[in-house]
Image (cartoon, rainbow, N blue to C red; front, top):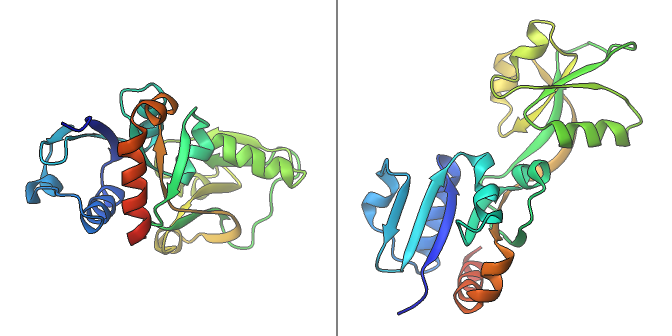
Amino acid sequence: MTEQLTIAMPKGRIFEEAAELLRTAGYTLPPEFDDSRKLIIDVAEENFRFILSKPMDVATYVEHGVADLGIAGKDVLLEEERDVYELLDLKISPCYLAVAGLPGTKMNDVAPKVATKYPKVAEAFFREQGEQVEIIKLNGSIELAPLIGLSDRIVDIVSTGRTLKENGLVEFETITPITSRLIVNPVSYRMKDERISAMVNALSKVI
C-alpha cells in the first residue's frame, strides 16, 4: 500500500484548476470531488487526503506538517514566508500584484498610506523605491480604501483589471507576476520522497 499524501488546497478557482491538472497528470479524482462542500476529502483510489482551506492558510498547514503538500499562490508564499519548500510552478491561476489608486492622484508627501492584504510585500516594495509609507492592512474590498480617503494607493492582486476599472481605479506599477506553486513540508519531503517525486514528475509532464 502506498503512503497517504495529505494535500492542502485553496477553495475556488485554484482548486478547480489544480484538480483538472491532477487529472491530466493521470490521477483519478471522483466527479463529486469538484462539487463537495466538505473540508476534508479522502480519495481512496490514490490514497490522497485533501484539506480545503482559505488560500492564506495553505502554507501554514504545510509548514506545521498537517499537510504534506500544498498548492498556494506565490502571493501567499511571499507574504507568509513559511518554512516550506517550493517544488514546482504549476502555472495555473496567473495574475499579478500591482499598485493602484485613483487616476491623476499623487502620493501624500507627508504621510502616504497604502492599503493592502499584503503588508510585508507592500512595505518591501515601497522601501525598495525609497518611499516610507504607512501600511493599512485590510482583509477585503481593498478597492474601497482610496475611494473613501483611507489610503493614497492600494497593493492588490490583479487578474483581468475589471474590478479596478469598475471602481474607477487605475494601475500605477506592477510588483510581481503570480502563479500557483506546489509546496512541500521539509520533513514530508524526506520521509515520502518517492511519492512526492512521482507527483512532481507527473505534473511536470503536463504543465
